[in-house]
Amino acid sequence: MIRAAVLTLSDKASKGERIDQSGGKVEELLKTIGASVSYYKILPDEEELIVKELIILCEEGYDLIVTTGGTGISPRDVTPDATLKVIEKRLYGFEIAMMLEALKATPYAMLSRAVVGTRGKTLIINLPGSPNAVEENLKVVLHVIPHAVEKLKGSTEDCDKLVKKT
Image (cartoon, rainbow, N blue to C red):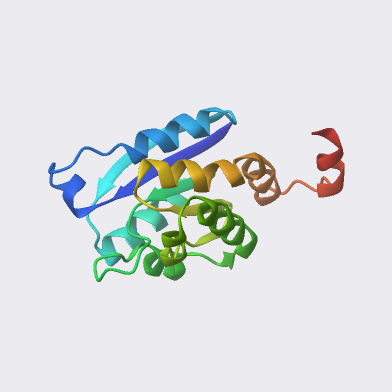
């Protein structure tokens, strides 16, 4: 079982001015791979708050942290900046796969700065804030998450053997 945390990063949602639909979409999709979302929180777009929350969740042993929101280019979009301060290894393959899939839906996807990486034994994935973008981005990497988590936990199983099983 993958122990997951979901963070929605939105000034409006944190003030109750907007209902967060993206966090629920993340949880719905993660259930399809057997992940259990045992933590959910909405934070404003404040870089230091995000950094602190990500570090705490990593230290608490979450296997997976998925953020939604704050990945664009507006002045308040700071999620990738915060994530870069936290991660130790960046996973460009996840980022590229998500970008390629999102570009099939809209050319505006190229404005996303979503980051994916690891800290210790935790995988951290940034997603855009809209429910549609969450689905487009997460679906393309969803099937790789369990193997990534197992690798972070120390699995020595070869990736090619896993591919042959599926």
